[in-house]
Amino acid sequence: MDEQNLCRRSLSWNLVSMYACEQCGARYSSDVDQCPVDGGTLLQLVDPILGRSLAGRYVIAEKIGAGGMGTVYRAFHEVLQRDVAVKFLSPQLAHDPANRTRFLREARAANRINHEHIIDITDFGETPDGLVYLVMEYLNGMPLSKAIDRGIPIQEGAQVAAQCARALARAHELGVIHRDIKPDNIFLLHGYENIFVKLLDFGLAKMKGELRVTATGTVFGTPEYIAPEQARGMNVTSKVDIYSLGCVVYEMVTGHLPFSGTTPELVLGHLRETPKNPKYYVRDLAEPFAGFILRMMEKNPAARPDAHEVADALKVFSGPASTMVEPAPPEIRQPVPESLETEPPGQNVPQSLGNTLEHWGREIASLDEALTGVELPEPMVEHLGRLIRLHQEVTELNDEMILASKEAAVAEESGRCERMRLGTAIDQVASKLADKKRERDQAIASLTQAASRLRDLQDELQRVWAEVREAARISSPDPSPTQEELHTLADAAMVAKIAIESQEAIATSESRAGDLEIEISDLDFQLSTLRGRVNAASAGTTHDLDSLRKSATRIQAEIDPRMRLIAESARALRRFASAALDETIRA
Image (tube, rainbow, N blue to C red; front, side):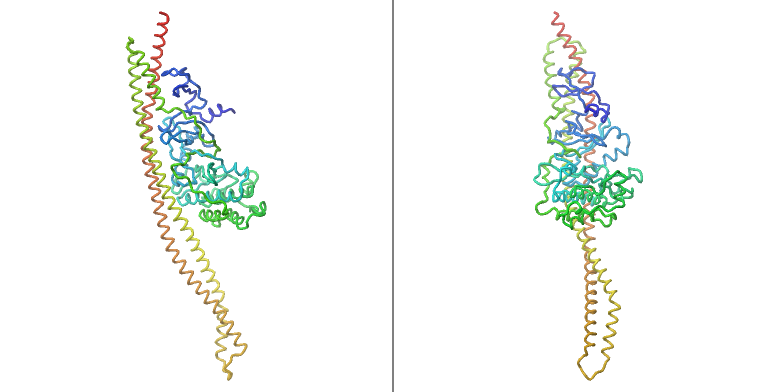
């Protein structure tokens, strides 16, 4: 299917057969043969979305890809003067409220997390004619799936996974489960000296406290990477992301999927089979690394490590040569699309409304000057006056929209920076909390082991103690103990020493576990407080942006009919000017 037919099929909105003026970039419907304002030639647009302005600040520049949920475009942010990506929900899905909710969930999930290794989704909304969209960073790089096809060194693969684990650790602490970790949703950015990862597509994410928008028992995920409990349609925990990431690491390291075959065979493999040890494919792979990968893929979720432990372990396995990269400062961050390999941002930025109005202003002024002194019919005088008035009104409305857009951009960046700051604090507290919990578990394990050893020793302790007491009652004229008595004392001393050590270990472990429980409680409180602050910051930013979006929508609703009236008046004046010119020529 060619590009034009694909576009018409996948973007079946009402905006069809659109044309753009070659001179001013203004768009018109198919019943116009030339620009009514400046007479410029109209060129047909294959895609009716191209050149469109969203929320007064995003101008759609080019289509860069399409997926199951919708289509992604490169757009230009007129306020921040940089490229962004805009993803539109497919109109075939937009009629279903559940699809709309699932689509916008991606924005809410990503905005709640705000991590340097998770794609930034800066804005979202719906146009007056029903187009639902997300605005994201514009990524320059390639999906991990392509890197795996080319081959990725083991240490770099470990570094990729470590960065993913750091992102998931933040997500899990904030109650967000991705549920579809796979190479296509892991993006490797170009332009960095070392590996830098962005985790994409939170469209299937499950968020704590969110109402269910899918049917009970519905299974989501990708068969090659799906966790057993997820495949069964059970209620999932954050450990499903660990399992899926383990499958991705397995594939990066070995070049093979853990299981292969048809979809049913893949699912059964995850449910029942144990994957081959990675060392089967890579003999020189370190045994601890191979074992850790398999531990991430344990059938029992409780046996899998959490994301903090995965990040720490994989950072070690990535080796000293692969230093973790710090994120770029916010002011030099490049904006971004999704799941698609892209070229660097292009230069073909469509004309903005402001540029079009400026161009039209010059044309209207020239027309006014040309008609000065000419006796015009009353309808033409009215058209010219209305044209000048409407142009001024739209210019003022556009200035108002630009101001609202700048306020929105400031609110977006301020909210993002605040959530980033709180998120970093959450990472630090959560990582420390995870360490303390592991220490607590180790202390409890030591306590259990010492108590078990002491219980097993009770019979032996009673036996040797009875022998010592029996030996103590022996009366002998010789003050020196016999050989047999010495053996009895030695056995008793050895058993007593083990008993004392076990009792001391129990006391030490109990004390340490108690101290750690206090520390864990304090850290839990700190983490809960930080989560509350993140939610409050997210809610505050969302409220501010919703207000600004409504303002932009209102302004756009006032601009659109005026733009149509401008075209009508300009067309009428051009017809009059053309007729007057013909009459002059005949005369």
